[in-house]
Image (cartoon, rainbow, N blue to C red; front, top):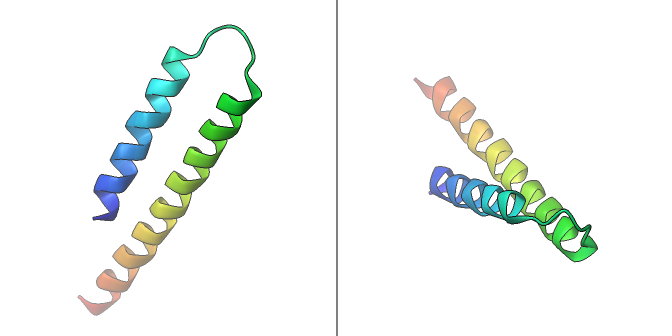
Length: 57
């Protein structure tokens, strides 16, 4: 389910940000950006699906 995938990505992103050292690491930053982009895409799809269901009710 999309909501579960979104929650999983949110937990992974939060864990990476909290775990992050003060030292800048480009690879970690890029990974966080990629996960964040995936999360936003899933949220957009979930909202689209909710709107479609709402139109039929």
